[in-house]
Image 1 (cartoon, rainbow, N blue to C red):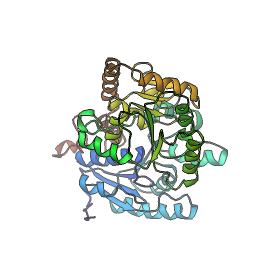
Image 2: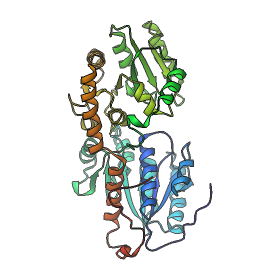
Image 3: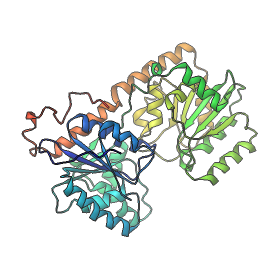
Image 4: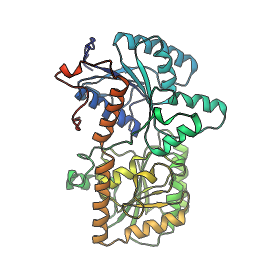
Length: 406
């Protein structure tokens, strides 16, 4: 990667985001989106992570990546990260350190001591609290000067478990890029390519469930629900990498074989063209058995005008308008999920068009990348208030006019 100068410039805020790795997840996407927004707004964006497949995207947006083992939960490694992060903060004159995960948050919190950097966090999930040691470990994400919660559900979790006042919480939902997640952005060639790659039968009504292969995502519930739907035209595609969880994948494949559904259900690895995948779907399912902090799948599916069914808890309750843009069903209830899938696949073309119009408008009004970036830049500006009072003289103001490119 080409070296980028980070010489201090008094009118150019330096924002350092810290995340374990730059992989395919929603937190990682938000981190990259914000790096683009920071640079487009006249700031300097630094991302510290343990690496990942998406590092190459940062060069295009003018952000800098620094590799540190901030993914580690080893106390010795975390302590060494404190020293290294403090040196980076001073070397690059960092104004805000924005931690997006618990282990990095502990190191970043201590690294900011005795420097001029402000410390803030984003809480991306309602972390499990099994005991007091776990509660203490999780509490790092709640110790920012300001704490971004990605949903009202996560904000409630923070208030109830860490006694954070409303004055310190800023609720900013994740946002998606509508120039990518829009039906008109997907060409027929992309649909044909994906359909052939997955060997989808001609004329199949596709039930699609995206998400990494981990038990709480509810794959077993979906497999059970599909077995209860007596329609010859359905074909279920489960999209997601097992990320080393080979035993769990084998367990799912065994469940499929046990129900004699090998010809109706297929597990495929991570998809690099999710907009095209959504366009192939007759219905999209998010069957999480545990509440998600936000959940990108319901938002992306609605943006693509696809019928979405999700479990009735967590962030999905905030992103789906019940009975208008999708279905919400009880967690772990295969019977209810089967009924909702059958209902979605039975919509007339007119009913599908109405649902698609409502869903796409709902996402455009509430969950865009631009809205997320603008709101987060507002938080940065709030923290830095008074510190860059002469920024109006800059040719590149820190806060954009309701639009962030990148």
